[in-house]
Image 1 (cartoon, rainbow, N blue to C red):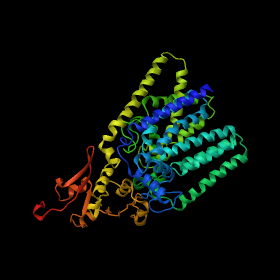
Image 2: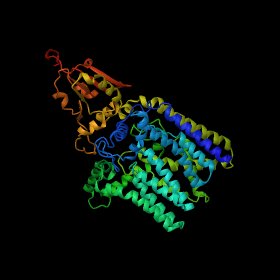
Image 3: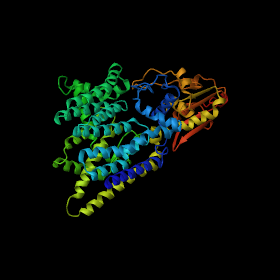
Image 4: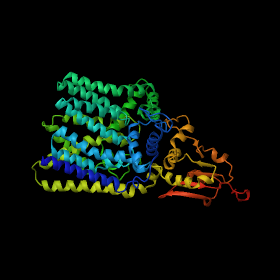
Length: 549
């Protein structure tokens, strides 16, 4: 009993550490709200006010239309109670992920106990999760993968418990959590298939009562069938455009090989795509990705924010060494399978080094690292104390460096400011203050999706927007644009067509402002750190005698 209280106390302390990391500079790093976050928040607000999404669809089950990327809806629904409690704010939008990251600490402990039944290993795995930049940097903004990872972690823990105890409750929780993950983030499709296959394997190997297994399978089927039908009947274009098989580079490489040797089995689109997938898959196990670079999209990472410390990377190999030689870990093979399948969703897409699509990978990694550390530190060898001290110092050094960089350097970098589409909050403040002074606000599309920021920061009545919402046809990547509502016009042609009579306010990007025949001193500039994100022009034409030749 005392030991259980001590474990709960340690996990509670780790929870407080994680909360501190999340709130110490919340809404400062990351430096601003990105368009996807604004979309989650405003759709939650729309559900709360009208029972419909921003485009008037009543409680969509399978997809949110949003920017034409058709987001899965679970994160938005999870945001509704936070928006109801705290209003439509940046913090309210991010709270579901903060809560998910905190619960993930406990879920990792629970999963580790199913694999190792070792409290020291499980507590160390939980501690690595609580302090991990890999986990917490992404959970500081609204992204579906954090919630999906929590559901996948907990569901696998209940799958292992079901395989041991044959409890129908464990099986039902496994089916429920795994099915919810399907509606949370796209990578869950692959994990769903793998988990079901693992479930069937355990059911047969452990001779689980077929009636219990049938009930669990029926639950999985009932939850997954509607989702599968929706995916088959109307596959989202955005998802298809991300697959490496459909990338233009694959077609170009295939045509080049066919020109040189037409009948070769290696001159096929399938082999070229497979070769690219294999290369991408292997790079996710490299120190370049894990220690040095992380995600190449600066919205999700930056060189200087190490997903893993150098010490953790070393202990991956230590953990693998002890796992492969140990016979006491009954499910060690399944842990290795879990690690092996984790990078597959990222490897199937054309983006290089995507931390979002490999986010779940940290779960098997922390379990392996924790197991290796405990086994090594419990072994007898010369200079053991010095090795332990060196490992702790190396871990602390790299982890502290990553957090310092994230909190104080990352939000000030120009590419980060651009990636996060900063400046919209300040732009909307200009609109709010000037709303009654102008008939039209002509706002650039260069920096992203301006309409969603206006909806979010103005708390625009969802019922009013639903009546007038119109979008363009999807572009080559599947994205759509809203070209206007209320007094707001986002069509670039409107800049030159509008009368400059003092009743139109023009908000341009820096590049658009520079090409216009107007001196810079006529613009009010919205600057974020070093970047001029918007140029605001109240009178953009000049008398004929002032026009530059």
